[in-house]
Picture 1 (cartoon, protein in one colour):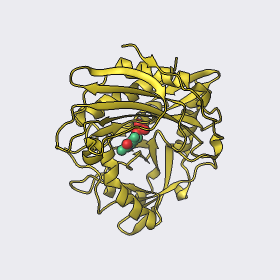
Picture 2 (cartoon, helix red, strand yellow; picture 1 turned 120 degrees about the vertical axis):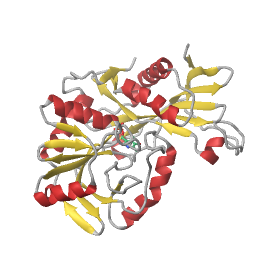
Picture 3 (cartoon, protein in one colour; picture 1 turned 90 degrees about the horizontal axis):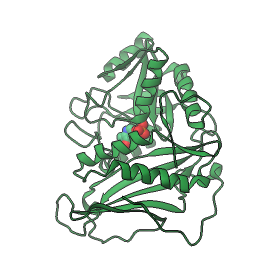
Length: 355
Ligand SMILES: *Cc1c(COP(=O)(O)O)cnc(C)c1O
């Protein structure tokens, strides 16, 4: 499928990335493609970034049949590169399947992504920790109020330059273990990157904020016992020298985060033992009491690694590693950032050149 190109008449002025808030500035172009039952996915094109016009009866606005992903591009010298582009593009189809969205042709979105990023390479910030955030998404585009799997869809990729997440260094977060609300349950949508899971998490997040916590750690929705994830990050524990994390293969209400996979691949390469298994909140608290809970940290594309300094559960606070960033989390962050920046050799094949 040929990817068409429509040139913008004027280009925007590029912002000082160190001063902008996440997700507020967008580049000059976006990738766009449509689906209908007769033509399938068709008309892939790179066009000037613009507002969309939607019918007030647009199905997504009413019933939320939509998915998204998030990944990042960097500059290696004068070459634009994307971190684990193929894995993210493959995950779009994992999410699509769960929401009954027709499978998108991998080659078209993968090529479209690389072409778009190459075209917009002057938007990729170069300083340490900065990046070009990439947001692919699909939404149902019928103008129809009936509750049905939609017949028409739109696929878009938009790009947004982002400042360093840790411009002032790491500061470990305070996390509230949620014992009242649930985000996703077994048999639900947890394994898809879909707006519904975020809608389900907003209120609990707000309540946690009001109590002085940064984020919520979700427990399983059935027994309220097993650790799931932090909503936009997966969670990992270092217990007695071993990196333990809940696995989306065992707990199907967890998102299969690509950063968690990256962390585990690198840890194994370093010879650090890695376990993917169920872990209960009681086990975490017991490990804290025993002194074997060495570190807790989140993993996700936005923050990469987010050290957890405090966990709150049922009114009690548990301080981890004296509230300071753990040695492993720091070393892992520095290594992944090195891969992003091109200062660490990419022996895993995570880096894809955008051309
Ligand atoms: C995106 C996301 C993550 C992190 O995934 P990465 O691929 O590492 O960015 C974790 N949990 C949820 C619910 C997410 O949406």
